[in-house]
Image (cartoon, rainbow, N blue to C red; front, side, top):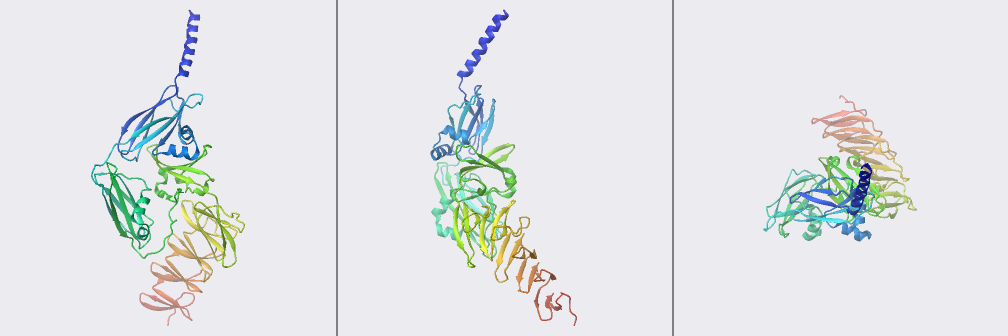
Length: 496
């Protein structure tokens, strides 16, 4: 009897093995919930599926990468898709989707030996939104300061989705409405009321906010324009004052507000079959394309919420070869400005890089280089020698450095306060003041609308406590509460 049971058991195990070999690994998908903006679903792998690769395609990414790199859909999914090791159901969801739009998910199942099976494709369609009438977007602005404004865009009930953007009036006049609309469509489509803040605007500048949307039939409606002007006197503001994360191939910068860095993960993937991967958490510092090798990439911007990750943006990145510009300065100094993508390095006359590619701005002044670069989570300016060495060191940095040719020194600013350094890096006047005037033999320094005096060596003659003053042959004449007083060269009051 025992022998019979043993034989039966043997054949039963063989039967199970043969049965397992005849089952093809497969992953079915069950849709749990669909809204105009979200799809929730479950993966259900069968018993023969040991693990699987999944690629969430919210456009035509699989086709795009297949055509660019001559890869099959299976290669794309296993190279850039997410591997899931599970034998049970797996919940996931997509958010921020376009109403009445189709999305695809590709799956490559694998058995316990690692053999891959044919790619499976499942399509989802979000629920429709909006009506058959004309889409219109109401725009208003508020909390306008010299460098910021808040914008409110409110779509009507007929709107399925809409685009919005902001552009200076002079650029609007140069480009025209059609081109501006084309640029705005490079941004993500929105679906609900949107209140957004711009924090890096130019002072005294007129801006136009533009918005246009589609109804439930996909027809574009009215284009709405709203104009406002920032406060203060107009001035030129550099375009690299915000922390840049990545530049896309078309030149658009992508960055996330600093107070949101802890909520995101950025994953950069080399766009070839090497499966090389670089993953960086934003709150560990800025990510600049200069840190990546030359290659094609795609970059996922992923939001973390409730312990789950949701991809919000995918960028196509191309890391390009170095471009060289030979420069001969007026004083006879020659060098090469090296550019790779959107960052610069100092090169010698032969084109050899003397610094890393870390500068978003780089120029020569007074025998030194001034470069703008990321230090920690902010952009700062640094002073470098002609050999590319730091004059200050990265432990001492300024928001801005301005060369003063008349005195052969530097104006420096930090946290909105200004000071003076010499070209050897010595800080003559600490950046503690609202304004500073170089009077050749001394400095007039302003603080809280009052003036003080610092001599050429950096010694404080008297602190900022007078409405105004001027230097005379015997000392200083100052104005204090409308009364004229006299000080000696040491800042002490002279009694007559």
